[in-house]
Length: 73
Image (cartoon, rainbow, N blue to C red; front, top):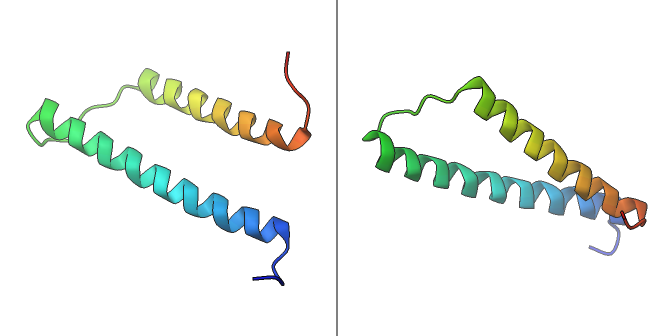
């Protein structure tokens, strides 16, 4: 793949890693729901979903800060 530039490589690797992490998270979620709820879908509150969304945004911001090359104090 010598013709592929670094941006394309980063996009492909990021997509693959994101898909694998998402799959792993879904497997853990469904496994936990099976044990706790006798196989039924769990009810997720708005607060729980919002907290998870804020955490994900923080992780994405941290990843984007890696490109800045600056260390946070």
